[in-house]
Length: 142
Image (tube, rainbow, N blue to C red; front, side, top):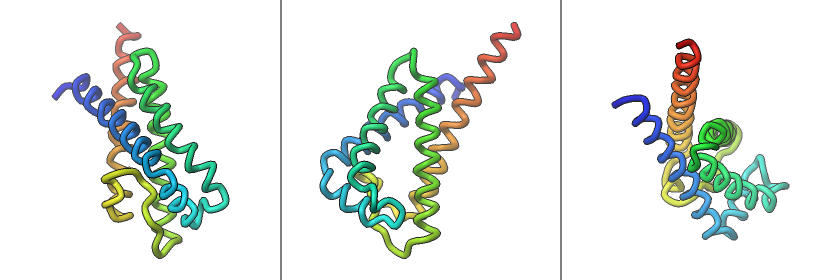
């Protein structure tokens, strides 16, 4: 499969992931606030984090949707996935049991599985950005 097709598949995957998880969190907002409050890292800011995360996820999904903002969206999704991955790693390191505050079917994953999932999504995101920069640099040299 070519880079362009793979990049588009990854972009659509990211749009689906962020839109789905944001919608899921908003549909179960009271539960999401409680779950964030149970986190050993975020309890003080549970209310703020509970509305900020879905808002940012929707924004990133929108940025990835439009041709003029796709690259910005890829950078934003990479940063967001890096934060989520670091959060999951921290939970695995410092907490014995914290309910998953992810949206939808991702709640079924264990924290270890979630870490692997996040790393895989982050790696795909980075790969697409690397391809973009290589292609852009190749065009500027010709």
